[in-house]
Length: 387
Image (cartoon, rainbow, N blue to C red; front, side, top):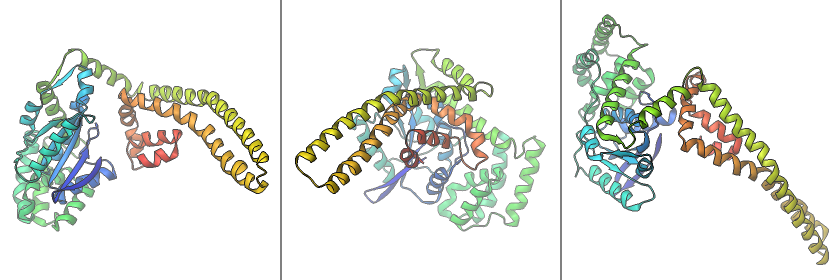
């Protein structure tokens, strides 16, 4: 997700929050905006924010981002939460594996944020030279990239030569929306006869090795995931050796085709029942309290001989409307959002998004949209803000 951009010392900095899902750089509009800006906006630095409690799930898009820019700072956030869970991360080793600076942060501690800002500035001003290490896919895919590279370099501007490998991968992948963005931003023609001819040869070579449009992405993502696992095995250490195994067991249950949806319905049903039933009591108390205050206000206005039309506007209009809204809306919001936050802290909301992703794609969106829809049950304003 694109968090935003900022300018520091005339340098443009892009902040990207990496969702913990396996995708090929963009699954939604905001991710497409982030991707295109990183590729063609020439940011002075790109900051990728990772969750220290689930490094393996976060690293996949880091590798894909490193394909399209070399000025990257990886920010590993929530180190305090990781420590509580007995997770220790070797940041220096991670930096060595990625070839870019890695900074650990705890958002509540300004000292760690200052270190992050200093590192960003050093990367933006080229005081720190990044040498990102590219992901290695299957040998047959790497061979295909080499076959296309020479043709792509002929049409690609010298200032964008670093995108050669990534463009080759996108051509092989055949994602029309990405290719259209590349042609428009770089003013090149990827449908030139020489490129098309070479691409046909690549497709035939892949087909001989049982790789087609249906399984190509799976094989590429598998390479990324396996590489992320290898790195995590070296840089992430658990005080409780059973922690990652337990996490995977929970994943298998909560994201399974058999139990995933029923468990989700059960959890959400319980939350809605607690919210609707539980809100009745504080709502009733608030209504009685505001009614008591209203009676006293009426007596006060009568004692002061305030005209009836003013009393009607202030008490029967403004006061009564405000107190009705507060007594009806505040209790369910005060119950629903803390419960929803607990699910988020437990890591269950990303699993809901994963379970519903396939269904929401049929409506041209992603599973993450389910979370904003759920927010609407607490308050539509919050849902609109999150969207």
